[in-house]
Length: 256
Image (cartoon, rainbow, N blue to C red; front, top):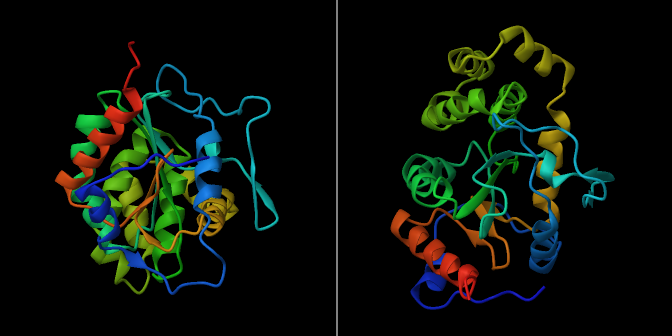
């Protein structure tokens, strides 16, 4: 798959942003792999209430990583309309301060102007990059709330970002995260059972394995399908400019 090129000041901005970066590993970056892989990942089917229907269509692509098959469509949290002109996969770590900055400052603007307007289909994949001690607990808690439905995950996700400093610095983050789940409206018996039984483990491990296969070096990383990935917390106006350019490129000649 050949990338289309985003030119001008926006490209420079893509390369000069802040991110929670890892120490470089030995394996090479796999941009071609990520583009082909994410471009072929199907949208998750949803019912009239916006809930995942569960089963993937026959023949849906699977990604081999760490001796397991990864169903991209079964991971993460989806927003927007399936088949939108732009498809974005975000990979963020709940412990990353730059990811928090994006979700508190930029995400609400993109949600209103690009996602709810039907221009962008967005998949949020929380994963554990290994830099933050309490991130696995936060990610597991988020996944166990997501298991109970998108409507509960939205306030849980927001609470984790807003209260990052508290749970990130806690000696035992689990009680704080459990209280967030309760305030989000989760069934606590189901939440506790999810944690005890490790039902969220596949999703957390699979997203983390996928990040390794795609060569993610820092968070947040945004895979705009068909374009080079964006790494780091772009400021809101720059992100809007990038998406506007991509949207114009993706829809050019659509009506003609």
